[in-house]
Length: 192
Image (cartoon, rainbow, N blue to C red; front, top):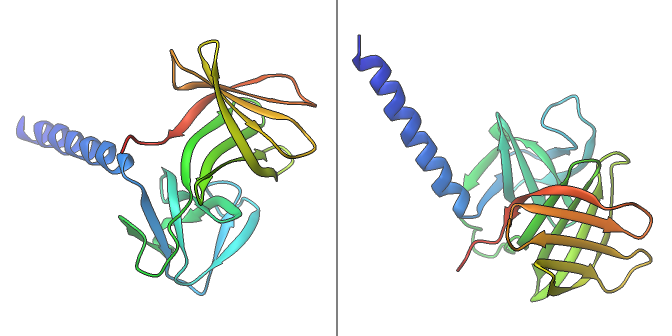
């Protein structure tokens, strides 16, 4: 009788170690169906943001049950995991996903993604309330006052994403037309 709880604890520990190891390396989802719906939330009841064709690949950012949060080109959102194959890296001849530097998931309505594309630092902002993605523009990085700041350098609105150096999981987002919004860093670039 005592062996069963021990086996459960060992299995759970092994699963946790496997999960922590797999999150350190970027995984990629490859689409197995003709057109895969990308949704605004982890469930079929959420709106479809777009579709990805069979064979396309996307970087996996987060998992929740049978759902994966993915990023590919201009589309990011949730896909149903049984409809994709999970790879450890992109296949030959397929463009690698964008390199994410940091994602700040605001507590109110905004998510900001800082990433590199072809060596250029860029900033993408998503408004969860209005379901709009905007400001996919070049950005600059500055380090001042105990925080790293990512600011767009072109665009009608000024957006700054700040990441605390003393607490790297804490961040905030500020746009020219909204007050400062606190948030949590949900992804950060792994050291190479």
